Image (cartoon, rainbow, N blue to C red; front, top):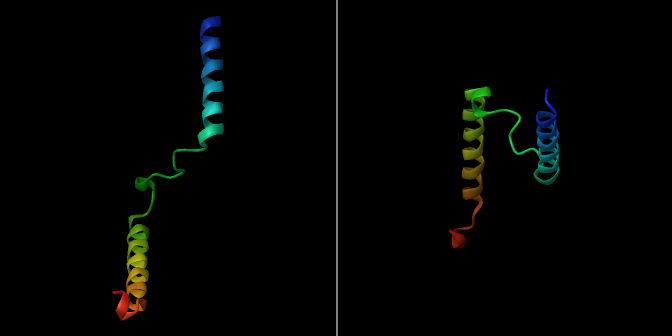
Amino acid sequence: MSERSSDRSERSQEERRRLAEIFGDVLPEQTSDDRDPDARREAVEERERADEWLRRQVPPHHG
């Protein structure tokens, strides 16, 4: 590897380290295509049930 490539590589690594320090891990550990689609559907259904329960708890004068 040439000296110039080495400098770029070191600079690039330093830049990535600084960006990670500032912004943290921006990308998720798993992407949606890695996840089980049934688990997502179940989570959506659970959220909808929770929302419906919350709507039923609202007093009539607030609806």
